[in-house]
Image 1 (tube, one colour):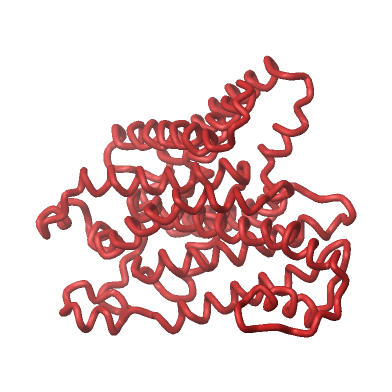
Image 2 (cartoon, helix red, strand yellow):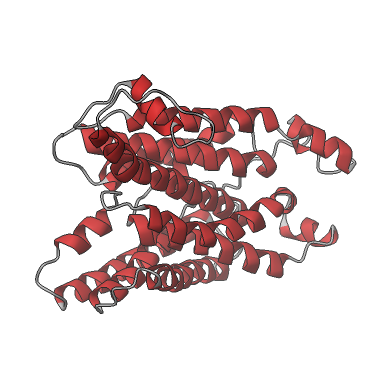
Length: 363
């Protein structure tokens, strides 16, 4: 039988977990060098991915094509014009979208794990992705062609799913891991059933909807990114600003109240922000699982449990993971493509089973 397994605390062993020092010391402790290195790795993966595909592009020419768009940099054009089209109209939009979606899902996963104090919580497992998918499919089968409505419908479905799962788990006393996961799985099945029903009752050509549900970036465009970023930037700002509060919540809700944290307001604000970020990402990428589970755990293994470090580094880790998954999806069975959700499932399912085994051993 499962017992509640809260995220282990490492106060005050981890040097980044000093939540009581003066602000000047707290700022000095923040790992800006690690974040800078992580951003460079993201850019490196993006540059390498741009040159790989059904049409292989030389790395130097790929860098020159990208650099030609930067003011005051005028490299000598030694490449065909079609290469510019491949880079700017085909590959870079999907790579950028994959990075943004990966960072959003990883950010939401780390926040859910901190709020619920359950390290196995993520947008896919607790039903947010399925609820968001249901809302988005409802818009698609209704014949609403404007893509601006997708994030709104996905947000409503995702927020409803996470709140139902949270309320069910809360009624069991605290937010136990087993109840939360089971509630999320149940809601996911219900949302999937509703989605299937909507698809059956819609146009007979279900291939576009099925492709979208499996997740991918085949139809990525620059205007998708322009529509997605306004949703994600405010959510990221709110969640990053509350990272220190998440550290306090790990000490227990009663202790957090004694330190002046408004628990109900904080949970409402952070759950809403994380759900909006997840829903917006799902609206433009489809249902892609396990990113919000793998990235935060990888960051914990490397840099500890401080959410001031965990959230931004998870965003960078999620961006790297999903860019690599997209690269595999479009090259492993070339010239056709696999849905990115299949690639992340191959990686995430064994990882989830490993985490479950580790938790069971610790009971």
